[in-house]
Image (cartoon, rainbow, N blue to C red; front, side, top):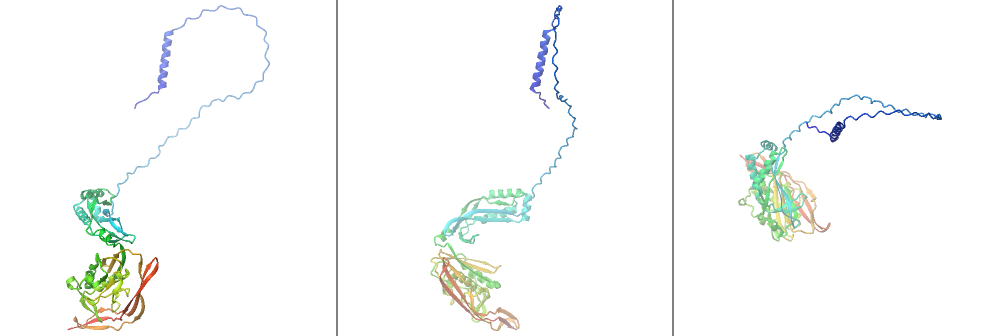
Length: 452
């Protein structure tokens, strides 16, 4: 350890040395000569001074030596043990590989963009194994390649409902991506104990064949109406025919003055994919090709009726069919005689989109067209009168074993039902019309086997 000496101490030592040197040079001085005695004069008389009163004085304080203080041993403050911070536990969440982009859109007739998000989700258990390895495995790379390939394919523009409930035309462009940079981003997340999501590196976009201009050039910018029905309880054959018929309204344009359902879908035949199913024929339910097509015609009727188009031809079913609740808003077709027709009063083309869900057994068909300054309101159906159903009907059937009964139809009361449709502008009704449907009372129908 290096010691430092203060400057005053050095200067004091130097001064002491200088004085010693000076004393050595002077030497010892000689003694002075002896002085001779002088004569002593006679003393003068002395007058004694007046006595003085002494003034008491406070005795000067006697300095006391400082009292010795007991020395207290200094105990160092206890130090808290430093616990090493544990390493963060690996995340148990799924691994999310996300592609984000802004794609072209047509909102309220104006071109803009909307955000889209596509995600590849790796389940938590598998993600945990990948995090332990800390690298992109061969199987993950295969899934990643498939995901990136799906992003590259553009999809034609169509209407999509946004989070706020509004409809907009969205153009889902294909995405150009940097596969190598994306793989590196995924690997980095896997090495991070808390990593959960990695972003796909997007470098560009590719437009589809049908773009926003397809709709903008035709003035198709506005939601008109949606029709909805349930086919819960339908046979597989009936569901098949619903799919074939509804397919005609999947991303399809109609241009014309009068919409004809039969013309729009073409012949209901096995050649066009329909299969035999139950149909209403006269006073009974029988097997016929295309049974279930009226589920589609009823849904289309609700769509165009709600859109405000004028009815040219429409016939309700003979009896109330439970598939078509609420009653009073159905339409049957029977080619070639019976059709469903509407006058196109929208002022332009009509764009159809359809969706079905077999798990929920629901069918929806939506129509879009030109913007307008009025709204259409369809009131709830009102039942004016009802008639009780008749007694059960038994129909012999040689295809069933003797004595076996099979129910093919269910009883329904007869009824007269009316529906009012209102056209409003600024909250005021400027036009309205009434739709009337008359249904026959209908019995339970059983087929009774006669086969021996």
